[in-house]
Every structure is written in structure tokens, then in C-alpha cells.
Image (cartoon, rainbow, N blue to C red; front, side):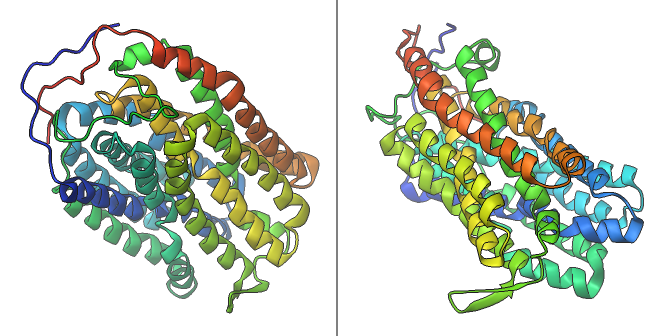
Length: 438
């Protein structure tokens, strides 16, 4: 193991206000890019109706977005670890705004695909940077902080579901893409100027909890790729992400095929069309689950929490097919599916950093995050299964089984492997002191 040695005296510990301020900035940036993924389903049918493109061909654009959002995050993470978060988020914000502006003008699948690639690059830069910054600023409450940051991405689109739907209906999807793209991009660009990473000594020490074991060895990215523990987590991430991404991209077509999309549903005195209600609740629960399960994992342990959440997701996906073909069941069970799915975006990055150290946390977590891109390759296959089988049953069964397998792997395979990894003696425990870029 390559040891990382101290080269200068640790900096003075910053105030709680400072590090929570950094966390809040990251959360707001995540809120601003959330619609690029979670608002996409609202545009698919209008695009298909205008140009006559098949939903499968339109969903290729979604797959390209997720691929470029995830597979280049390690490179963006390296730039963050090398040059600091400010410039990477600045560029990311500009790209996300440009992407939706291009979407508003796209009159061919080629241009739509290009726009989604640009959006993926921008969203990945912002997402990876903000999660990495949370991992570095909160080693003592890593699960909670990362969960709160990821919640911004999960819950960020909840407040805009109804405005986007109304703007699409009254002004067209083109104006919606353009106006929201400009607004979201500007906010991220402005906030980027206030971001900076902690220098050695500015953040607290790592957690000392017996249930949350954290390595004191700082693994470099190439070393991480040689560790079997990393690839076990990667496989689990792919299995978990696939089902959730299918639901994210296909929820509107599923509701339409179930003949539920426009049927009114009343909950807690609020009446909305079933699809609108489901999308809003899904975004809220998909956001809340990230800090919730992140916080639980700080006490219960990462793998134990994974087992509970992943198994719940498997049950929820199957229940959505069996009992979700009535309006109320669709709304409630789709909420359960998103609640049991969103936590992967807090549990996997914190587990990765627990294993491989905080020095290269942004890059290493980015390497693991590429599993989301790999999983996105399976999203168009859901449409293929629907066409081949004449319904959604096969797609739901496959997604449910993926989650059950991942739940079992968490406690049977990952837990003992990670315990051995963290217990492995290293040639140095200290985080490299060198000045961190701002």
C-alpha cells in the first residue's frame, strides 16, 4: 500500500457554520440539476407526439444522459481532487443549462442525443463534486451528510412537477425546456463561486463507531480498481440502480398502459391526477430516503442498512405490478419503490469512502458511481421486454429479483469482505496534509 505522509501542519478546525454552509450550497446545486433526470419522463410523450419518434428511441437519449452523467465522473472527480470543486461546478452548471436549451430546439434524434450527452456531462460534474465535498467535510457524520446532499437530487424536482406539467400544457415542451434550463443553470453557476474543499485539519476526525468501520489508509484510484470489494459493490450498485432507473424513465408510460395517468386520486385532502400525484410523492420520498437511510447506516452499519432497504425495494417493485393497477395503489406503491431505491446514492458513496479513505473520495466514489451508467443500459430493455411479452410483468419480475440478490449480497458477501479490508494493516493512517485546492 502506498502510504500518504504529512507534509505540513494541519490547518485550524473550521466552524460548524462553515461546513454546514458548504453542505447547503451543495444541496441547492443538486436541486437545480434534479430535473435533468427526474423531469425527463414528462417530456417523452410530447416529443413522441410531435415528431412521431418511438418511446424506445427517445429513451436512448435518457440512457445517453445517464451514461455521460456517470461514466465520466471519475475524471471530473480527479479534476475536483486536483483543482478544487469551484471550477468543476461552474462548468457543470453552464453545461446543464445549455443542454435543456438545445433540447428546446432539437428537431432530430441526433440533436436530442447530443443535448442529453451535454446534460449528462454537466449533471455528473455537479453531482460528483457535491457528493465528494460532503464526504470530505463530514467524516464524523458521513452517512447523514451524503444523504442530505443526494436528497437534493432526489427531492429537487418535486416542487417543479406541477409547474413543468402546466408549462408543457400551456406553452409547449420547447419553452419549458428553455426557461427551466436557463434558470437552473444560472443558479448553479452563481453558487459555484462559494464552494471550497477542506484542508487537512479543518474537518473533524473520522467516525469511531464500532458498527461503522472506516479505513485510515488512503487508497489511490488505481489501487481501488484492484480491490475485489470495489467490484462487489459495483455489481450491487448495478443491480439496484437498474430497477429504479426503469421506474424513473418509464413511470409515465407505465401509468398510461395501466390507464391510470389521468384518473384523480385524493390523499390528505389533496386531489390530483394519479400520475401527477405519484411523480410528486415519488420525488419527495426519493429525496427523504437518502438522509434517512444514511443516518440509519451511521448507527446500524452500512451493510445491515443495505439489506433492509434493498429487500424492501424488491418487495415494493413486485407489489407495484400486482397491486398498482388501481389509482391509489399506484400512487402509494410507486412512492414505496422510490423510497426504497433512492438510498443507494448515499449508502454506496459512504461505504466506498469508509473502505478507501477520504483523500481521493471524489474520484473513488465517482468510479463506483459509473455503475449507474452501466445500469442505464438496461433501461431500454424494459421496452423490449414489454413488446416481446405484451405487458410489464417480465420487466417487474426481473427488477424485483435484481434487488433481492443485491440485498443478500450485502450481508453474505460484502460485509465480511469489507471487514477484512478495513482491518488490513496499512503503511500510514494519516490523511495527506497538503493544501487542498479551493
